[in-house]
Length: 309
Image (tube, rainbow, N blue to C red; front, side):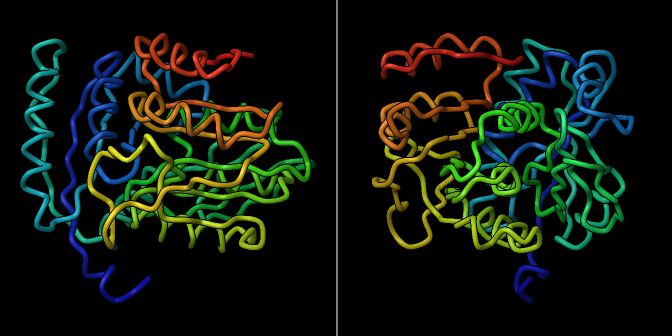
């Protein structure tokens, strides 16, 4: 981590809510925050318990904004979005807190625990000792600024699907990699090569570090960019000019875990980047968005082989 990044300051925005309202807040925060929204549950939950906690009791949904020239405008949009949601759901006013990256990381460690997903995947905090059982795939993560740590329901659904979808020696494209957790999982599940793509330069940095820490840098290439049709990312993440677009190569498996409108816009490109006979895992949707996304993919010739909710 560079000296400049240690000095970076962030604005934490948090809302305490539950049930369907929590999902609506998550979608809003994913649209405007850096990385995926963070969902803090009152318990140390395994994957099948997180959704129960979200439905039955209060959870805290958080996102983070870098305190820079664009933060005031993004904060305004977030507050407007929450005000509109509060007309539909019992959502309290958000709480704001300024903090540096080191403070954020220490605070997050208190909420970040080992998580077992699917039949054999285990996500373990980097600072926690853990002896894997026979056949277990262990992913070690150091929480970067608000990137998916496996707690987000759609990340867990992707990991479960990947346990059977990743064939040994296959090529995988992870679109919107965030922390790199799905790309790392693909490599540990014996994929031959993985491209991890993200529009956010901060995500590229975090994913690169996590890939190296899990010993899969030889298999996983982390790139800054997006697919054609996905240029309208939540914030302008272009570092120098236009956002790089991946317009070549085909993959045996493509995984995309981002916002529904972006998946819909990317549908032709997702199809073009998948080898004939290959597979696509698309996630990040709230339930009422499913028909629109399914229709966009089916128009490209996809057939739905399975779904998880």
